[in-house]
Image 1 (spheres, one colour):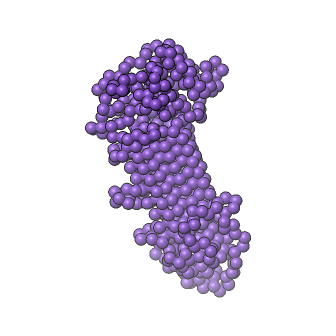
Image 2: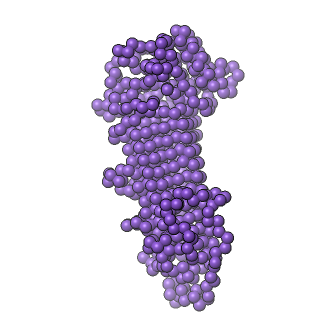
Image 3: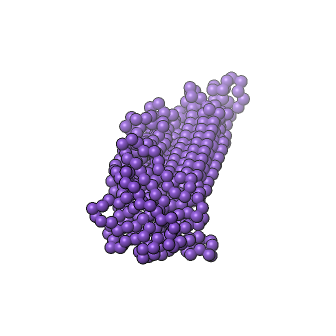
Length: 513
């Protein structure tokens, strides 16, 4: 079933094998014009679907119709369905003002591109792939079975409008899958004030699933982009971006790539199982991410999950502020990496079972509370091999966190120097006895010595959190019912002689207690 994708949008047909065929001309004048606006009382309709229903009736009477959609947000699933035994006059769907887009629909086809005006524009195509033809409207026409549709037409089959796909694609239930490694995007949206994409499913292309560039406010909700050779989503040069329950799965390099965006908000959704090109040895696993963000002013993620990525689950670079809450980063190569982020706040976050390491903080100020760092770095190889690493002039604070390395030999904390430490309070540690390291080449120390050297974690404890099965990390409840809601740890106070001896041994003979 065909869908009309929102306010700047019209149906299009892609016919590479018929590129030489001349498209039938559109009418210069339309017999009827219908106007849609959510605000203006003078408009004929306030909903797009109602206007399309009326347009179809008029087109069935052999009168051409133009549906003009005014500015606004139309959050509705719209469709245009013709009868197989009728002939329809042309129906054009246009935007009243260019540059104001709302997308709503459930399927997308390889090659759609929305330009900076009110029509579609063709993208670059590899030689030999044929010419893609994009039109601004839809023309419903009853055709003979032995004649192929021309550019800008649809064939009506069994009360549905079936679009003609690219030559290298297969169609199933309105979904076009393109299994190749050609670069480019399935859907590219540029130079729009407002973009809403809802209920979209994009799968299997040789480049990026969705690219949104140089736009104002962008909202994606209930969207899935999977199995693209490069990335599921690429967002660049936006004022605001909000992702709601949107997934990026099984992409070759990264699931979500965000560059130069003012405000980013991610609510729910998953960026998982990305980086398959690393498994095929086509790139380094350090280039694979579940979600990567560069040059973002403010970023928040809630109820987010990045799991089973063959690289880093979440990477954030050159950002002013990052808030991560009630989220899980599980079974990635590295759980989370932050570099040159002004303020990082983690609350009720689980970083667990990441083979190379848990949290890597560089040149950033990071504060974690009520979070779990467990069983990371068990297969570190050349990775950090620690639950938390803070280096390159970072500042690390931990409050009421569980840091557990099990019995695998992975370090608990590795910090560049004592100056790297902010506030450490009320934590529970468990793992190898000498699990704390100050300096990359420093000597590992036990918990009591760590307390004495740092003067921190004095109300923290060493003990088994009774949480040692990584298979259950995914099912830890977060939020108000968080499973490890602590009361008081059994804290042993250090004696003055223990503190003095440790500081003199590791910090110099003249170090004061």
